[in-house]
Length: 473
Image 1 (cartoon, rainbow, N blue to C red):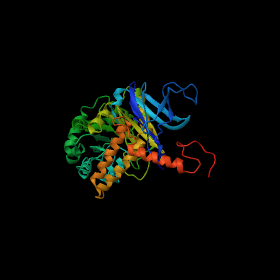
Image 2 (image 1 turned 180 degrees about the vertical axis):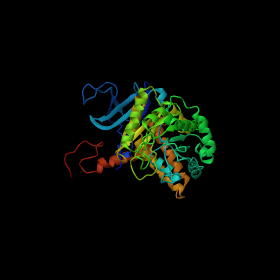
Image 3 (image 1 turned 60 degrees about the vertical axis):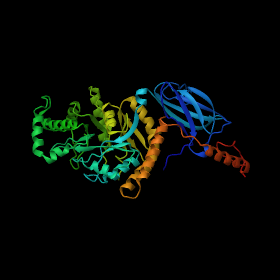
Image 4 (image 1 turned 30 degrees about the vertical axis):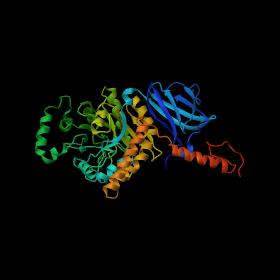
């Protein structure tokens, strides 16, 4: 079931806190153009403003009288403090529309919110989907970035690049691979470098073993004997990832390999590795099993209590698209300078990312978000008021990508939807002017409103055009 369409939109929906913001309320469909001769009222409530004098009747921070012009309402308002605001548009005390605004301090306002996944698999390892098609599936679900991290294989990502060579895409691919070095149960996601680390131990096992032996001599004395070899192998992997300029993610410690009934990494070893400083991020959300997710969050809480505040990500570890447990429920929301591999990974390193777990079916999904309160608060706003609508606009782009990969759609179709999606996002964040009716649209609606009044029967009219009429024909 599709979400309920909205009659009106407010632009922008994200504003700088403490500064006068030029706002526009505009119709999403022609029939809902606002009347120039009607006085409207806008009620503004600060959600985190301690304005609730009664449980069910929050005290409005402001009541603004507004007069429409050209079918839209324009006003200037200063949203004080970083928080969400709830707005109601009223005509004669009747609520016509409700809006949500988020005001941000400058450091977060200037960054771009992006939804993505740094851990996924294709048919080139043990996944079920073609690499290029998987990229389209990600975009169809509204993702802004992704990393294909096939097991011990870095090259499948290049297959995606070759498929879409010369085509402007709206989704960013980050190079990646998943390392599980020989005889180690520790899985490490490597993203960000064009250079493969797994190829080193696949192509020259002897050299790898010699280098691990050298790492073993550097393992701190505090590491228990039973973990020293695994620690050395993780050290080897992360050293090479960092040398290549990549980011090392400690993946799913509570994954249970098929038939083993044992976690791939026990609590004690997981804690030792995460305290070591060799990992750049922890895959907090990345296990389809709720018990594993709960333990992962508990482990992170224990780490923080002990003074180790490692960056976190959420990942699907997607292999197939046949079930709802991972994709598209588990992902990362980061706040980056731009939608580029470097900026995204810098945001993760800088702890400007939150891990997200979704529960429920499409368009009826609830999200649990983990990270610092400030980022979680903003991310939850976006997960309610931005990302679901963005998924709808990106869906056509993803379908077009998959069709193009099979020779059934032109590149121009992809690039047209990319431009439309970019403009929609720019309006939401105030980087582009609001979408308002043209003169032709206003004339069109004026004509049909006149016909509606002069030629229609005396009956219950539209909710915005006429007073309530109690009799029918």
